[in-house]
Image (tube, rainbow, N blue to C red):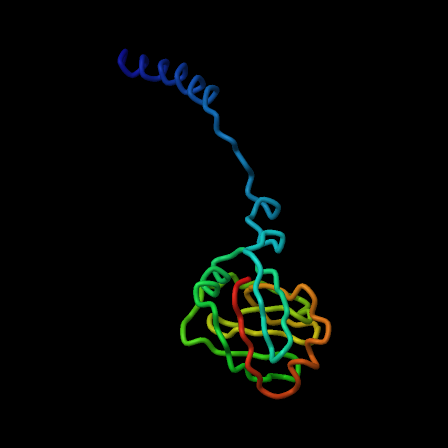
Length: 158
């Protein structure tokens, strides 16, 4: 019994000492502390060529963009879809970081599912979820350049 008393007393002395000298930072888990995807972190600039017209896009910093960049340069035969976007199904799957977009903006470059690259030329509200890749810095005239039919689009890093 004496041995057990010594262990209890020793524990009562050492445990508070251990916790008082530790340099742990306790952070409560709540919505504010969850890692959040932000567009402010960029992964560089992308040149997009459609016929004679060139656009520049700012890429977001995520695993999807890294995988897409590794495939560049690419010339894609993009198909018109819903009269608001051009899409192309890649032969490989990319990593995703899917989120509720809410509103798609003209010039958004997004990933649908895990292998469909989409370049939007009209803005609209959506309930669908996408992974962000980037956004044209200036999408002025994009709809008329892309037109309503299928089109070749060249993507390459600046």
